[in-house]
Length: 410
Image (tube, rainbow, N blue to C red; front, side, top):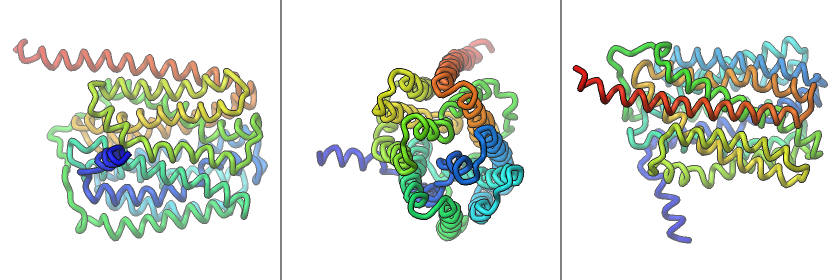
């Protein structure tokens, strides 16, 4: 047991203190992001919107996320990651507090669009910061540490959020989200100011290639959009399924979602270190992650037994643990061809675009065809994503072969 504990701690060694601070800031921020998992419940129960209305609101959420990620990448390449990060956090805190006072449908659509426009400018800047503060051999583990912070925060957030809803009301969530964003801003200013942080790997690319010419990246982009499409159902249609079909309370839903974050916190770093040291390629590991996430919906079709919800959550969690760190690492390596902020922005946009179509499509399917049909369609989409990644692996193999052959052709 002592050796197991020691080996677990060793997986965290060698990371820079700046990466640890970045993880802590992310933890504070994500601990407060408890509105999002309960947003569909808040809109249907407190504001009495129809599922169709909720679908359009989630699409506005996604459009804001897409434009925010794109804007964040552009601003990061132009001004650097630090000013983008602290302005995004501070303004997001203010906007989250104000969101609770908006109830009219079109006004809420615009407000959630604006919140996500500002909030998701943080993501590409944060990824660039993480890469800058990491040695080459530690980048995947640095990504994993950031994800641990996200999921530890997400583990606490829904559980606390469910408690706040049952003991106070939904409005308390908006105050908590806003205040934690502002607290994260203060920590960022005090520990990651350019004069205080140590740059380890500031990437400079000579003659950067435009991302639009990187065809293999766009195949990867499609696969990540599909992964995002199926993964994000856990933040819109799945909570409704838990409530409507299995009669779970908000507190129960919060605990089930929180289990996801807790498992990731305990197991992801050792798992990623083990997989990172293995012979398996990043692309194959991403494929396995997407496959497992898709299977989490297949099992829901097998039985009405309530325990299947835990099995589904475990499959999704394992898929998420594998797919996210290695997909991020794939983009970091690919970004050596061009502008780093732009690559990280479009990586974020693949998931932001999934917000536009994923939530709305899922909610519309549930409203018109029911949950079983929805899970069947999502399972088929998952299979398409797996095939897309197999095609990417084939193209990457050809690309490597071409690079090897070129010198002999001269």
